[in-house]
Length: 312
Image (cartoon, rainbow, N blue to C red):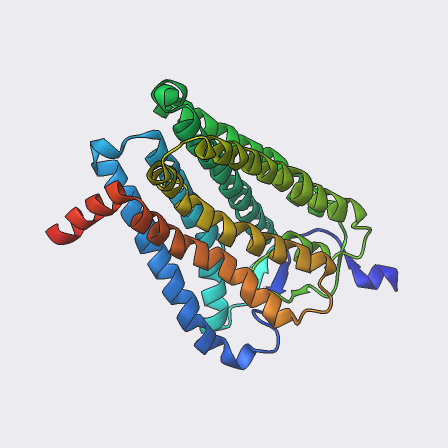
């Protein structure tokens, strides 16, 4: 019986079901999903184009915005083409290699997103607490190096996830109730012991993401202390207004990321379709909202985008 239930790790496929219980509504669900995806691509490519074309925007803050835009494009593109194939054409099969590759790039993008947000918090800290030294502390070259370190960190942290899964025996039932290959969703298909997978996933969430959140909180604690020492209320508002876009993005991204990640482990009482829809929206809403939030709250970027819009 054991030999019948277990299959070796071979080039066979998994089946992604889409959104369990809502299969008949897949076409209708695809409309907002594809709309968010298209608008997200358009917004982020617009940000990249404008920052690339305008020499005045070749500054650390806008280099970080470019990194955020690239990360958003990568994460949303790693899941949406396959999800739309499921919704539109009922193409649910995905090879094991393709599944692990999707999972790798998806989670690397999430880790990179957190690293960029942490670097943005440091950028705001230097800009407000050490404005006279800002241009010497945060050069474009230094920001590029920090971005590279963040990418290397993400790759090294996430690489063990597919490697651990490759060692697992998978059951004959290879149906994954999801629209994409999340780490825990794939791990639950294993007939072996996935304790190491579970523990490592929790370490990534609580240690790595927890460290990023702690550093972000420390940066904003120092920012608030510095702002409160400024006697002018107008100066208070001006200093804090430079942080509002970043704060909005963090308030959207971290709670939804933690909800999506922890639901796989502890959210047995949550309906699967609710969890899966919210997990997809995390990778769709952020890429759509980030260009809007930064475009509205950053006057220099807003003016440059308006300039190219008028030309078109």
